[in-house]
Image 1: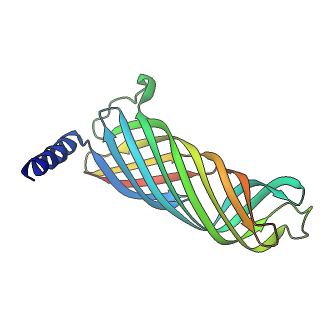
Image 2 (image 1 turned 60 degrees about the vertical axis):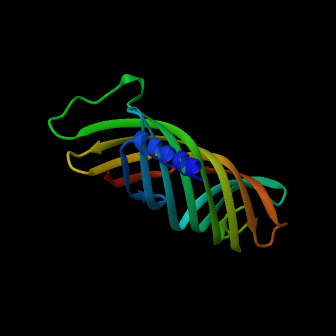
Image 3 (image 1 turned 180 degrees about the vertical axis):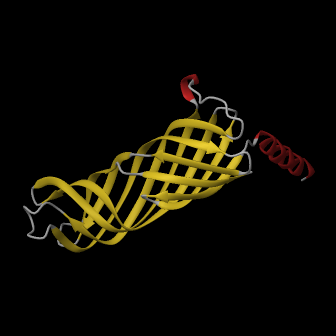
Length: 199
């Protein structure tokens, strides 16, 4: 028991010793929510986000009848994303400043989400209003990329703006159709402002 406790203490101490600077705060944009960054070494970081969108849009290529078409779901959507980012990659850095620091970063990761009780939009070929299905649910798992720029103040505050597109596999369920369909999901408008506290 003592040996197990000693091993646990050593593991926790090692993790704490390795832990780099961190930042937590909010993300305002296509999916507003919580954002957390954890530095790994001097030039890398791990970023995790959990966001929510009310009446936001989700885009898919789906089957409607016998035709593959662009469908769009509007409704409440929850999305989680995590990326591994490289800070100032390729040695490209901003000029030194008397206070604070500018950095840019890029990375790749994975996003997943679920939307429910929305309504669906398809081209007017299939509906005079373009709206079909009073209840639409959808989900997706998608690789995502990230590119952004951030400013670290000389006090514990960080501001950032980044672009995080996603493209991957989706599932789509629409009233009046034959159950759940597989679909191609994409999100290309995910631009957001981050405001985080550094510690």
